[in-house]
Length: 267
Image 1 (tube, rainbow, N blue to C red):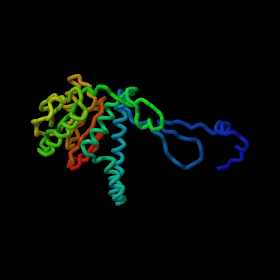
Image 2 (image 1 turned 90 degrees about the horizontal axis):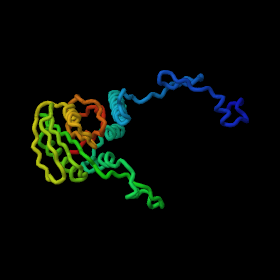
Image 3 (image 1 turned 60 degrees about the vertical axis):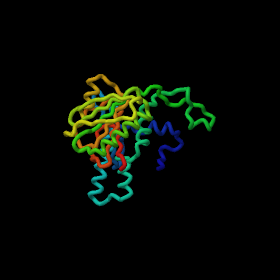
Image 4 (image 1 turned 45 degrees about the vertical axis):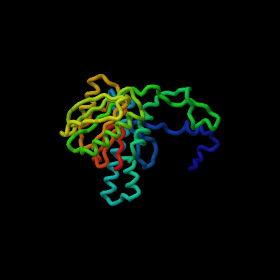
């Protein structure tokens, strides 16, 4: 909109004469006579949380809000099939094992730039830039849900995923925690142990906290933590300082997860 009083003035001078915004209780409130409303709120970050922990919580919180909005739209009959599919793919992306492993494991292992290899995306343009790479994967923790709601076929699937992780990433060691409502047993594997033969124990209730507590109690800082489960549980631990991936069986629950990434397996 044109305002005559700003005629022949530079942009800097115009901005200098505009009223400053007033910040009140975390919201940005602008002076003026408009009837619009809105604000900028900080992402929730509890005292003592690291930036990574806060980001994990914020992402999970955003997905929770999306799920609530979707449920509200569905109850009003305003959720189209196309939008429903888009929301499903966002909240519960359905990928095969190779895609799950590639996306998540590359993200957690490539943590620094190295001039020993170049980023191929820029070579065609004559730019030789360092690529992200990590020389050592370290340890991985895999928790396997062995509660009564997990059937034998799902346990076989979880075992196949574990073998795939070991084969494709070659970590120093994988700690495998068999857990229902308590840690039943823990085994250590390396690539030399392939092919794996797992003997699950449990078949009780479900509690997600014991495996994380075991990691902390044993002073382990894993490169990542992968929890294979049907998600029929709401007992979660505090947000850990390492990346977490929830691998959910195809017929698992659709609960909101408070932290980490989640992938639902295809049938």
